[in-house]
Length: 262
Ligand SMILES: [Zn+2]
Image 1 (cartoon, protein in one colour):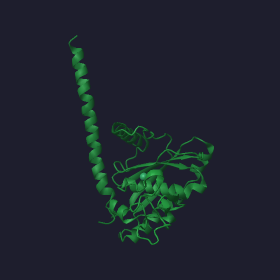
Image 2: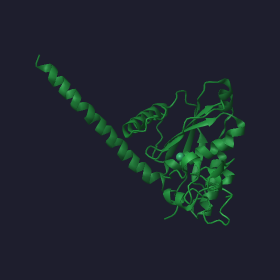
Image 3: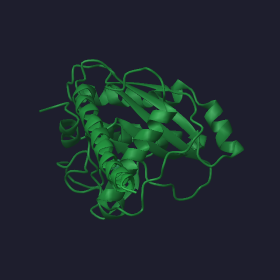
Image 4: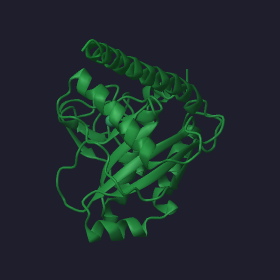
């Protein structure tokens, strides 16, 4: 009779202690990742893991057709931008195609409470750990999971986590979309190394922080999209999606956020 409350007490005590230890470990790893991923003294490794998001043959065939070359323009674009900012590192990124992942990542909660986000953060880390169980160090490796769908419908939000160097991208499995997919992948990679979003309501780039060239005269139309805004402003209330990374740039604020400049 007397043992039962004791068991309950120890269980109730152990559960938060274990959670606290997990959180502490994640925090320690995240702090290391934050430092090492932004040194830029050598290329940052990026692995893209494709997922058949809608379980269709069309998406299966698209994934089978993927090669490293499909993502080469991301590295080329980063090299071009690094040169503009005199980074002194000719190849900031080294992106390669990883194995197809057969399971689906947990979706971001619609409920944006802090608790729901924290819980999702733990779930996604667990899911990533379960689905990339290799022995490579993740201190300087960004893992981007790209869930492809063939249907022309609204895709769930893509996300890039600086804590964990993890990106989850929702993209279309169409050849005509490959270039725009690379914009989204580059955007999420930059989130993982500290860049913040620079668009506001309805996806409109925020002036001046979401403009590639905020001092251009006339201001509109802009020639390029700022990568963390994603759209090319044609006026203060209209913008269109860049068609490829060739039409995007990163501005000084983003360069500062990813520790390219002081
Ligand atoms: Zn974003």
